Image (cartoon, rainbow, N blue to C red; front, top):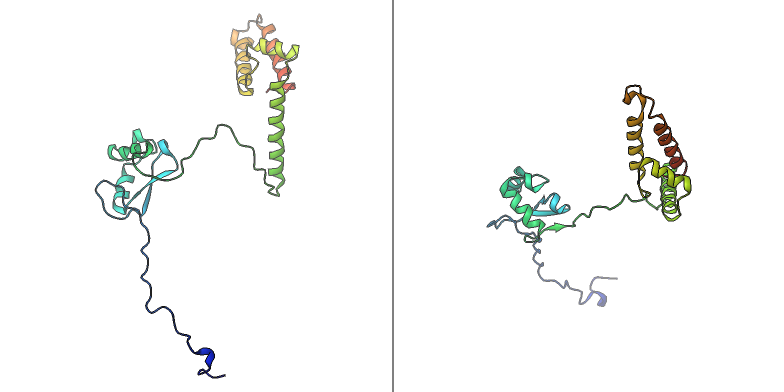
Amino acid sequence: MTFDSKIFVGLRPTSKKSAPLRELYQPKCQWDSCESGGINRAPVGGDAEGLYLMFCPQHAREYNKGYNFASNLSDPVTARYQREAANGSRKTWGTRVEQATETPLPSTVRSGTAKTLNARKIAARHQATKADLQQRKLKVLEAKAFETLGLSQDATPEEIRRHYKLMLKMHHPDANRGDRNFEDELRAAIDAHKVLKLNGFC
């Protein structure tokens, strides 16, 4: 087959001239009265964590000099930019970070390590036990134990432990110059704590 064949007739390049290169989008520097491109990200801080402002290199340096995570500790000029970004009067990029209300369970995706699987099982078991304790009615000994320690029935494990240690210090003979009149209260507090611990309250 030769190149003068009918097959090759009419095959010509379609584009006569190359298309002009498209300019890359670049946000404008957010510093007042600056016309340069804002290529440097600057964090807003604690008032709007996860969001950032865009500045040119020169103004990014200036912003960073006076920057502090808490806007009330920042330089006055930097603090003004942080406040404006946090209340929405100055455009920002990124995603606002929401604070978690409770500690998340370990990931439900199987990781393959025994440590992660065991942590997941223990956390799930602990949550289930906590939910059961909240739903069921307290037994007589459990209610008496809470009363002895002077706690409400919805006290957290940390509150129970803290209050128990406080009662031990108060009623121990060493804290009362060897006076043994408080031994009954001390024994009652120890027994009450044992009851709560055995039943999974702390």
